[in-house]
Image 1 (cartoon, rainbow, N blue to C red):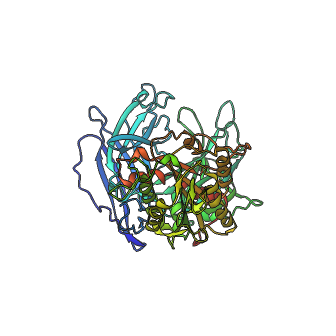
Image 2: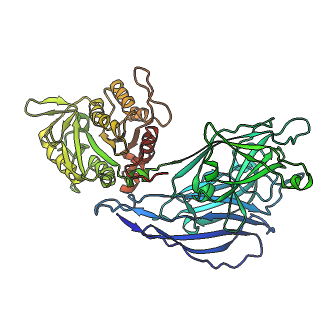
Amino acid sequence: MRHRQMVPPTSWELDQAPGDLLKVVQQTRQSWQLNPEVLSLRPLLYPFESGGAAQQMGDCLEFFLLESMAYTLSPSPAGPIGTQYCVCKVELSVCGQNLLDRDVTSKSDPFCVLFVDVNGKWTEIDRTETAVNNLNPAFSKKFIVDYHFEEVQKLKFALFDQDKSSMQLYEHDFLGEFSCTLGMIAAQELSDNRVITLSMAGRKLDKKDLFGKSDPFLEFYKPGDDGKWMLVHRTEVIKYTLDPVWKPFTVPLVSLCDGDVEKLIKVMCYDYDSDGGHDFIGEFETSVAKMCEAQDTLPLELECINPKKQKKKKNYKNSGVIIVKSCKITRDYSFLDYILGGCQLMFTVGIDFTASNGNPRDPSSLHYINPMGTNEYLSAIWAVGQIIQDYDSDKMFPALGFGAQLPPDWKVSHEFAINFNPTNPFCSGVEGIVQAYSACLPHIRFYGPTNFSPIVNHVARFAAQATHQEFAAQYFILLIITDGVISDMDETRHAVVQASKLPMSIIIVGVGNADFAAMEFLDGDNRVLRSYTGEEAMRDIVQFVPFREFRSAPKETLAKAVLAELPQQVVQYFKHQNLPPLSSEPV
């Protein structure tokens, strides 16, 4: 493994525009051999385009970087370039100052929308909450963006004044926007995967409503590098009570306290008002270390203080008590954590040799190897295999076939080793799979039917043995390449539902121009897959991709589409089983 150094620009020079300005506070840190080093902290000024005459308006977008660590896995020389790079996460915090006031009888109700450039078109990624009657909003919603080091990622931040409950942006007043690239921003990478889960309550809070009780909510702040408090999290509002119990919530530890459990944080309690003029109840300062003293049987109680009341009233005690019922720090492991922790991806290929593919000697056959030495089956094997083989240390992969008659008795088999060695069906790397595939074609007879369940159950038997592991050591991936409709759909549905309980995923690549509606049915993106017994799949483990949509596209495009859901499926399984990576640090 090698480490790529990312050196963000340490400064930009930009003339101040006479109109609106957007200020980006930059804190960059360089990572070289995993040693972060502070490089600079400089304010940046960007012109803010409001779409009309220049207005005196200054918006502030704050981006922070903790450790800019880039990992890349060495690709095979013949493999597609770029697809092996691991992805970093960055967190973008947005706040505004002196925004345009578009409302007549009140102030603007701003929200921010993040767009990314996808093939020349701006595509909405996410949007913040709406800050009611507020020209200086500090949005608690963070934008989480995948940072691809090898790509130029164009971003656009647009502010709108909410007028209706509609999700359509044209229904709201446009305040302004600006564009940049993610590479220009020193952003906060979520390299610390610890998260904190808090369970909070209140007791005898001050009554703020004239004809009722309070509607309390909490806001959590951490100190910024400029010395100002930065909003990190806002709880939900609990209506009509002085003794609220908030739902447990989880926040990245790096967001709450920059990963420093001793750092002071401020908690402020407000009474919610629909017009945005929330009434201040009280506040207190604490630390994560202090809150972790809370136990399920012995909660931590912190006095909520209103400084103005404290000065005015001699007998003032507090404005209520905030109770930390429980505080737990855990690790939110990512796909990269499991892979770098030593998890092996166990790759198996299943190839369709049914008669509908055509005679492999005929150029119209899907198994015909053209003068360039390839066909759609080989293209799919290369595209997927060259990515996955980097995550398997021995690079020995079983390659199985189905739907063919085998010598010497020419019986149909739906689960045979294409190297004709049933006791050792392993091929050395993707090259070994390709060689075994080419060698077996002249020695088998294409037949049928198209049965998937035997190969699914074959891999599932090995995956079931891995369920006894105490760490995230192995995850099994079955790539099925087929040209047609499944003959044993009921048995295959049942096999997939059972496999959804195991450390296993299934990738199906459909070659040719057949109707692949049944494959879409197995891919549970839009519905929960059920067995013929009525049992539901525990999770979606099937990803189907029709090869015809990628015939003229680069290999990388097919690989990205085929493997799009795999990282999420791996993480989902190990989290559900509460299995940490093989190499993991204590919390």
